[in-house]
Image 1 (spheres, rainbow, N blue to C red):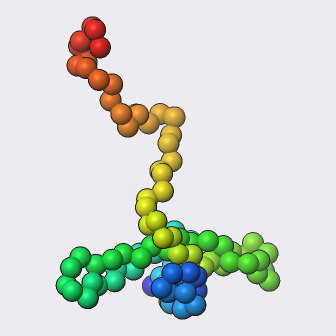
Image 2 (image 1 turned 135 degrees about the vertical axis):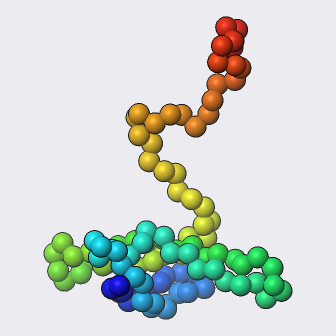
Image 3 (image 1 turned 90 degrees about the vertical axis):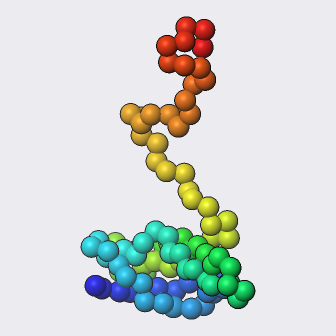
Length: 99
């Protein structure tokens, strides 16, 4: 597998450069999660970094990436396709005429 040295910005990993595996397209993953073990043996804390483009490079059309710290660490909303079913179901039974 091929890897690329990718810088991390912000958070506890600020200023570090780690080798990150790249996919078939040559891009690193969109999110990078780093589990940090708790000192008391509890559940690990997960640091979340999001992929963002670096400053403009010297080559045209060649995107270089870095990871920026995401303190919220929450999932971003997924794409909503027009043919997808809605997430919420209406109240009442399907065969109930009153709703």
